[in-house]
Length: 118
Image (tube, rainbow, N blue to C red; front, side):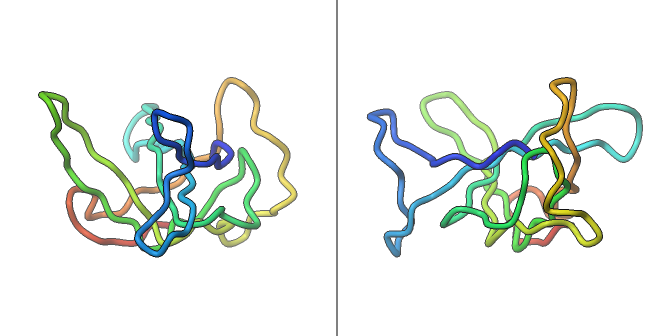
C-alpha cells in the first residue's frame, strides 16, 4: 500500500464526492495469483482512510471498477467504500522498502461492477 493522498484537480483543488467529502487516492500493489507480476492500482475513497500504514496489507471494502474513455484515452478507475488494516496485520508496520510493498487482492468483479476484496 502506498500512503493515501488527497485527489486533486489539474488546478490543485481537492476533489469532492457528491456529498462534499474530500476524495483520497491510495496506491495498492497487487500481486498476481500466478507468477511474480505485480501491478499498482490507484483506489479512490471518500474521506481519508484511517488506521492504515504505508507498506502494510489492507482490506478493500466495497470495491468497484469503471471502464472509461475520454478523447481517445481509456482506462479503468477504481473506487472503494473504504480501506482497513488487513485481518491479522499490525497497524504499526513500518514503511515498505523501496523495492516493493505489501499486496492486496482486487475484487472478482473488477470491470464495471461492484465487489469486495480482502
